[in-house]
Image 1 (cartoon, rainbow, N blue to C red):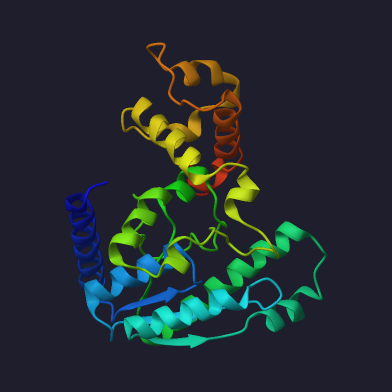
Image 2: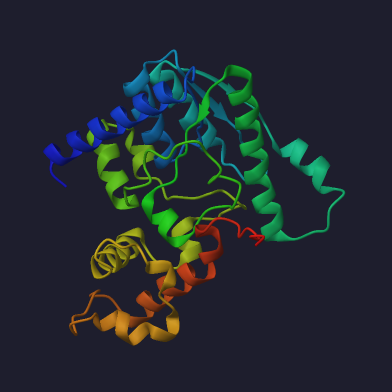
Length: 273
């Protein structure tokens, strides 16, 4: 991606944010800042669009799973951007509530994400602001997010950018390298990383997803592709290979999309006739 393209993306996103704030008659934005690349890029773009006064950052660590360096990185970025922010340790409150619930690793991890989102929306209601999403296209296409958690937002400025594109944009914006080169992680449990959980580097993931998008000619029907139709997808409609990596990589991505398909469509409504 050349610099001209990067400048165009920044211009498009800042115009999008301004238009959404104006149309919805909002006082500004609330953003959850994790110290990771997506939230850092989103915060930078929000400030460029609206200025410092209309962006409020919430840093919501759970000390049992959140590395101290993540909180520090988020605080330093907020200070660099000159926005108001607040740090709230959510681990104690989470544990008090979980004492009354059955133990389950994944359910508890998703509970943490939803608890954070509840706090973001509390401040959004308090200040008449919108919650800024930080999810990127790679996560949205894979369904790699918590339903009614980090996907429950008011606008998604990075939703049409793959993770590798967000990384390029971060370097162009001069986001500190300790953030832009950090391994992506939802910090759902100690030591968790996104690439480790998926089993592929984002360079491979994005390569496969981009080829799927090209293959579908922009119709975005990837969630409807099933692993059992893998051979047709892998060779493409004209017998072309859509990914230079291994067949196992493509199968892995297809399986993740299939497994998370329920997140990508609205809840079904019973229509009364």
